[in-house]
Amino acid sequence: MPMKVLVLDADSAAGLECVQSLGRKGCIVDTASLRPEYPRARSRFIRTEYDLTGLEDGGVRRLVDLFNAENYDLVVPPTEVALLALLGPQIPGEMYLRAVLPAQESVRTALDKQQVWTLAQTLGVRVPWSDLVSADSAPPGKFPVVLKPVFSKTRDSGAVEEFRVAIARDLDQWRAAMDLTYRRVAVQQQQYITGKGVGVEMLFEHGTARWSFLHERVHELPLTGGGSSYRVSIGQRGDLVESATALLEALKWHGVAMVEFKVAPNGEAWLMEINPRLWGSLALAIDCGVDFPLGLLCLATGQPLSPQPKYRTGYFTRSLTRDVAWLKANLRADHSDPLLLTRPIVPSLLETLRPLMGKESWDFFCWSDPGIVLAEVRALVRGQLRGAMGALKRRGLRFYLRKIRQPRVLGMLRGRKAKKVLVLCYGNICRSPLAAAMAARRFPNTQITSAGFYPKTGRPSPDFVLAESDRLGFDLKGHRSQCVDAGMIDEADLILIMDIRNYGLLKKSFPGALNKTLFLGMLLPEPQLEIDDPYDDPATMPETAAILQTAIDRMNWTIG
Image (cartoon, rainbow, N blue to C red; front, side, top):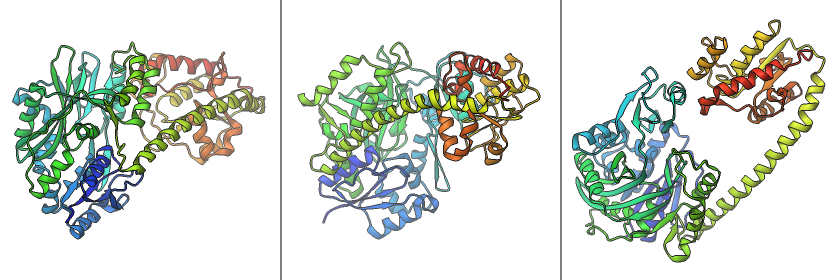
């Protein structure tokens, strides 16, 4: 009788690889989605798809009912969202066993970057220096630093919140990240290590290492560091396998995990983190001969595991859609920036010939599953066409706004008296409050208000904005963000916006306001539509402030 398998979040890279791997072996495969992602085309190996998103408690109760009804032989949680769901109190013991996981305490330790760092220190595994910091902590004395939320994701009453890693190049970026991104979470501030990412993937059976596989990241997206879009299998490196084994043995591991390292140019390996589930580059291990989904099935059903499989080294796999995005990013990037993981352009283009030499395969391209192959190709083609059409539309919109629409608005506003002016940007914490303060000083008899489109209100301006405003003689310490509403729009005689994104949001929500809306940058000596947001690059704040002041100084308040 065929084995029955439930793969959670099969729209993920690892989830779909599990579906194809186990489906090819004759298993009956069902899938259940716990995260609101757009699903891939239906694999022919999937019997039934269950959408559990949007349900109360994140679909956990329905998931348990499904398991009890079908009595699956194996449950696969390939994403952190799915893994967190299986750690909930509603999950019955039998279901947890079929998921092939170690004790919950071990999983929670592996998910906690600070606990992993502490464990590594006790075991003598090399780790970067690291501190736990908060928004109130003193800044580091040396940059760059890596800011890692202790938990990448948290689950509360079914809702999952994600926190991403950031690199702070300087004090301004550090303050911006700590004030705005990490104010509510514990953050691990860590030494930046230069080098190549290496993953040690392992299968454990009740605390004993059984299989291992190693890969090196060739392309990472984003270029500042992230998941691999292109990777290569490498041979067993003793020190890495020993370190990974020591960590997982200490956790009495059971099932799969990937231990991530950064290998510096001098060959020293530094532990980054433990990924306590299947990984996005799973296709490489399977294509090279280490079928981790099959290993999980054996452990779940009590079948004997084969000895450590021999696997092919020097073999590459590529996530086609993601790697096209990487190639475009690499082409546009500043290759002199030491913090961007760029590669020479010509060799990167020549690498695309490896499939012709039998040294490369593409994720999900399984000829026994043609629907997925066609879906991937269609997604790639549509994405590129959509990008090209989007670029043409943006150029057309820029031409229309700059040459036609904005001159027309200026003509309509000329000679009017603007008693109430509304200044808008997206978040209402950087550009618009400073521009409003500048306008209020220059035109004291005019009522100046600022707001934004970001729905969360009451946010203060970040420190780098406060520092620049103080230098210019403006006090924004009491400013708190507010979201623009219909009342503000109706009362304003003139609306000033910062960029095309503001224009699009205003057009969508308040199309009747466009006839009194002006791009502030159009008042510059060389008119422009965009005044860039310094939020993501605090070092540009002085330049942004100077641009705002120039535009405000050139306002002809006979139109106001």
